[in-house]
Length: 187
Image (tube, rainbow, N blue to C red; front, side, top):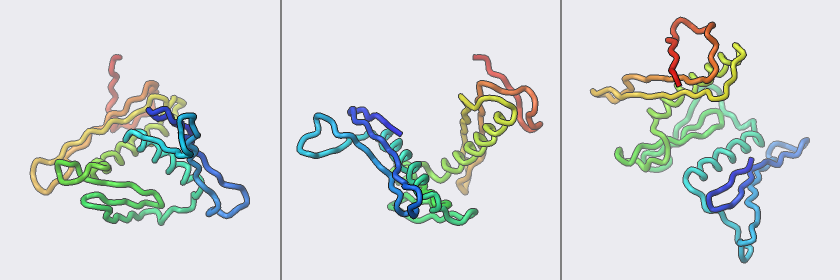
């Protein structure tokens, strides 16, 4: 899985997991490719925040492939503090981070817990929409789910409403549950 940085560096994230060897022998490989302008044997890469997030995702993807048995117990989550208002959320061996925005005293290093809740609802909708399209022979290409939410005006702080918009270029006209409102937007 290769990515090109804005500074011209090619990063390739792969895995080395020899068959027949115990799982701890597997490794995630980050190949930064030596360039002609690298001097003195020093190798580095300068990343934008977006590139760093993408690289983190590629590394996590390969780590899961190298060590697929790191999962915890299904149906459980553990949350531990990192620093300030940032927390690490552990679910079945996966690690997520939550934080608060700068305006609320956090460092804005990750989504808020409420944003993660809304993202989870949108992710569920996307998953089941994809499965629905599969069952009806429609293509998932272009499928997207947008979630918008609003907080209650009074105390305690809570989500007052979530609105989901599911977009799919190819939709079957039949098979929709009665609870789904059908609308077609002209393009």
